[in-house]
Length: 418
Image 1 (tube, rainbow, N blue to C red):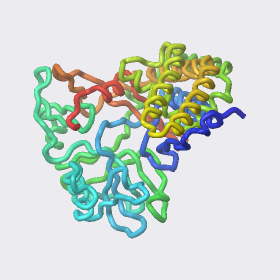
Image 2 (spheres, helix red, strand yellow):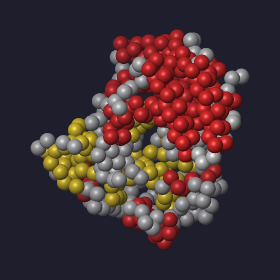
Image 3 (cartoon, helix red, strand yellow):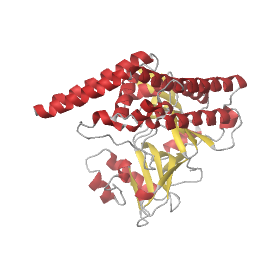
Image 4 (cartoon, rainbow, N blue to C red):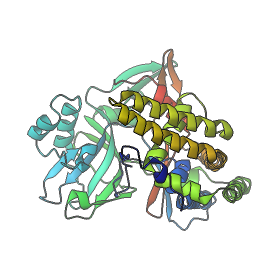
């Protein structure tokens, strides 16, 4: 069987680690990226998601699919009792490092985050969330939305708001509303979306989505979960909209009939090449370009790989290393060029998934969130949709985000942090 690893085996042997493959929710993927992540299996996974979402929005779901709101918070917060000793901890994504960064005391926070702006936020989270009634055998993951001092009063388009901006999106709560009063009384705001269960250590725990925090309370905390509890009564597909999804699924099947499965699977098995292709797609997103002109993108990704290799070669100190890397680069480029038509077809499949995903996402955007949402620009504030949604089906989860809206904002927007 053909493998891209065969043509890069004379390289330096360094491969990229792909997050999220060990049962930890450290990174959610875009629907269309499953084509790269899993090859033919990824196409099936993504197609199954489309079918599940179609059935749910058409009112034919068997209850196996769920949709949650994606909140644009930062940092990711993990908290609960460490199954190894029963002590409560808070932490960020470092809780899953080889040497877990668990903060069980303020001294731990000072030791692990001494020079970080996270220090006071984690101390506050440790103090307040330790009083929350999180089940003893569960660890929860959420997005921190604000702590004391982050809330600001702003006038946007002539309307008074209380705002907070943990990351890209500015969340704005109309002044004087019950939610405004509720938020102002809290010292910390957090939205939970994932829980971990199992053991006997934190590293052994596995993620599941759809935390129910409706009965979780702690003094001084504004605690919510990401669930959308009235989805069925808010958005639903008409027969015409359902047929649109059916046509996309049929299109994907026809496109896949033209794809050389060995090439697609070889890309999926090569973490380094997959990472490079995703980086090229994100570069296009930053420039406001969706997956559209797939012939241009097939040529562009090969040029992107070449440029990346050349930068790596320029940093090497010995001629022998440069020669070895150059040979590996040329072999890979020749292989990619021979299969450029297949790469174009793979982008065609990804484009079909992306357009269909956006169709569903824009339907879901009719759901009214708790707050108004804006993005900060050089000239003020621009109305934007929420970050997006997370689809959960069969124990798997993917994000439904319009990359040209939120993802481009995420790359380019003015943020509160450096």
